[in-house]
Amino acid sequence: MKKILYILVFSIIAASCSSGSSDDDGGSDKGKDSTPSTPVLVFPSEDQLCIENTLNFTWNASTNEDGSSVIYTFEIATDNLFSNIVVSEVQTSLSKIVTLDKGVAYYWRVKAKSTKNIESDFSPVSQFYTEEIANTNNLPFSPANISPFLGQNFDSVSTIDLQWTASDVDKDPLKFDVYFGKNKTALTLVSGDTDNTTLQVTVDTANTVYYWQVIAKDDKGAQTSSPIWEFKINNL
Image (tube, rainbow, N blue to C red):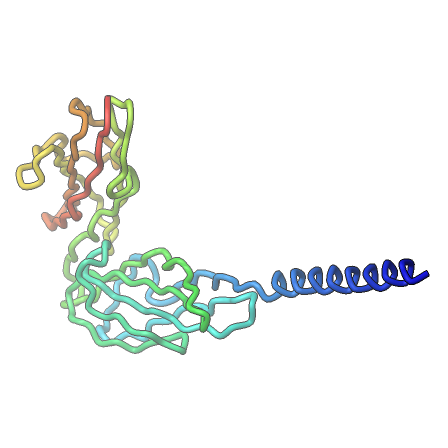
């Protein structure tokens, strides 16, 4: 009889422990931290010509499924790689008034961060121009890299398709000069005055970093250089 009682008591305790463990697992899933959604930029919009240089930057709110509040990292740069950042601030609101120089192409982006220190991706970069003198020609925006991405590695290839994008705030037609080579400080012009935004190049050396750059030119003689991009060929 005692033996039966011991078995019953042990079974009840084991069931209670098992039940508690299941509840804890379910609770941890429900409390799992989430990544905030990527903010959407509103103003200034892509390729906008701003006649004023004091601008109220605005973006849409990020959502966060775990309910924690969100703050925003807001950045403006004079290049599309954000190596020359002129404004970098943390905001709790969805807007920021900034006074910038006139006659300059700018690039901006925003990312969200929860109070649990989980960050979203940066928003896609938006570019705009602050007009210096009304009704004058403005420089094209700096060409942006599409492919290959910066620092990409390749195996068993003999050609690479370079691809980029570019635009002009005045909507002028653009032509491109493309420079390419193994020496970053002495690139070779491989295509001049092309209308295309793609170019296939030959790679012939393994374990080598290749560099390339694009110059965008409008029909009035204004031109803007891209950053110098790079990729690596591991083996042929």
